[in-house]
View 1: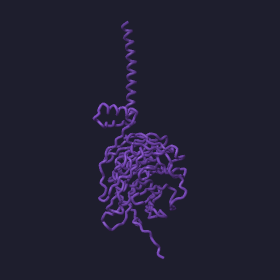
View 2: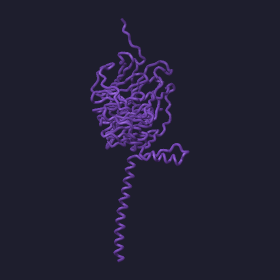
View 3: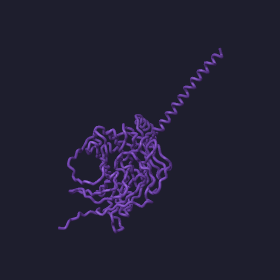
View 4: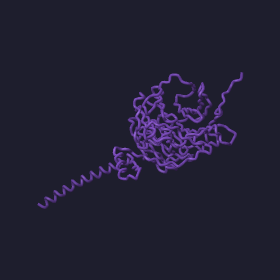
Length: 432
């Protein structure tokens, strides 16, 4: 009997590293022992966590800036401890979040053409964790919603637009949280914990929907090292890529609705082991070359793009490889999501290639008790004015600087008052 080979358009996907002149060289990739990707990419920039003295830093490079990166190249360097995780906002290609050993999350607005000088002032600092923050993950469809997980075994979901915490998940994990990911519409999160349990959680109800799945739907054992596997899932093609940290391979599988569910496709291997990996969103790929995935593999001193391609003879657009994919426009605002609304990703066609739109600048309006009173007073005094322009927030560093200046002025006034009293006392003695 002839053996029946399963038909799949991804059976012949092959990976290829780019030429040396298209790599990013002479980068001091972070040596921190943490199991995040250390790299995040989007259609404009590649960001890489790097070694930094006296704090934490990461590089942000425009994609076209390949070649040797000068040691004096500016970095994003506002954290006081090593940076552990970074992730670009899916709805704004110039906004990136970072989590650090200093227990804070910072959100940064990168200039349109990249950094000219080092950046130490984030647009907002999110404080709520008591231990280091090792995971940051943006909501896939709601604007300004960001999740962070720390070594305090706690997950916090933030509204970055107001700088406030929306949800605290404090009691769901008895041990260290290894990874967190949102589902496609952001209604649920899935977590992996040191207690060897996988939990599916409804964050708005603070309830576990599923946990301790005893029997897997499919099982595929791999001959791999003891390093961590970094998974990347292509929801458009139902292909999952597994990149071993400390390994030198990328394995990829197709996921189907029928048993055995998991189908091994192929494996890309190279000589150098990877220390981290970035994964390009679909809208950043070259559809003219039938590119279905692009990875940014971190070596000890460089970042090497690896391109995954489906071989096709035709030059025409391949509809079956590129269904409409998640675009940069959010489906919901943060307030709508917290009120219980869900929205699937807003999709875009890649038929003519993705054309980026101009990103609007991110505004952060810190809320305080007086906000509602001030707004009401403004509305009462100006009935014709329906919307009040938000007051720009002052960063904590700037606030501290102002407070120090106020204190020094008060001290100066106090010393001058003492001097005046002393002089007046001398005057009274002379008058007598």
